Length: 443
Image 1: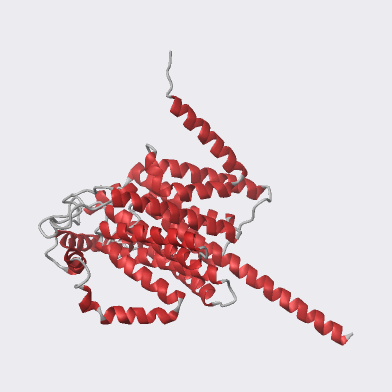
Image 2 (image 1 turned 45 degrees about the horizontal axis):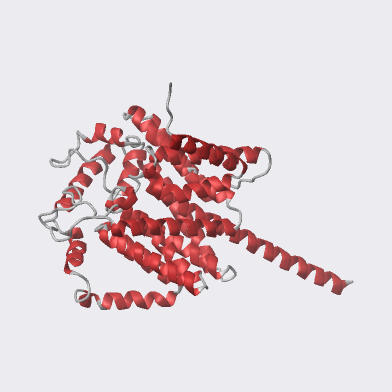
């Protein structure tokens, strides 16, 4: 006789129902992924659960495409992202990391496919705006949970000899303060954008609470990289939203000496220690970078491959004393170059350049709606914040952060694409009307 947990049966039935719905509407699978990203740790294998939904959504979309019920468009930026994904797959095949590297490469490649799914499945602004709202709401819930948790005091996260007064660092559902920090930094400008575009006062007030929760949670991660990324992302968003806000930047710089009177000393000490060599974590990063740079030089073209096992197998010969147990390079750009070689870094840089260029073109166009331009500016600012934090952390170490990074890039790309099509239709209509008038006059 066998006994089955009733909740397991409920879960299986719910999963089957979800997959059936996704088969009919792949877009709902994408939305489900965006909502589950921060909460996926409720599953025994969080990354596998998200992997499954993305893969099934992709298969469903392809089946719709084969039946001519969906369309796909490829632009120059898409080519760069696709080639970057190809280098990830190759980095899992040609490597000393074995099966573990192949597993990591497949996970990254499938998670990267969220870019193509979002950019091609969300063909209406309503889908994009709903997805952004869902991301904002779920992220705010993550932040609220973080504000009420006790946090963790760990010598691996805080040099207690220097920062004994900061207490615990919170990690909420992400399991790591730095990963939580970059996740919140990516989404925070989107929360600000919701405040600006929302007209109903009660809803605007709710988003203000969301923004305060996310901001407070970023502070309590005690992640200096996240703080720096937050500053960069907010300044970029404010300046893009209205160039007159550049005076806020000048005012902030001019009043820097006065900040010490308002900010807690512990926060000031923590932030100013970014380049302070008395902090063991700073020394640890610099020594790690020394070893990694030597590794990159010896594997400049093709890299060492994807995954922790590939890193550990190669890093032993280059490790600076005291950094033998490091798992990654603590720098996004060094890690990309190390794993995928110079080719991977160039492809990633090309994709980001195209992303920034297309976003700016749409933002500068006054013919687009104010809401669209605000959302695009927010997405651009969030990614800029993550890329800034990437100078001091490998921000893709967590699969879920990698996923939200490319999801926001994709939402921006999809919104830009829709705006460009609408603008082209309006121009075509204006030209046709003009020709009609000319013909009438001629006749």
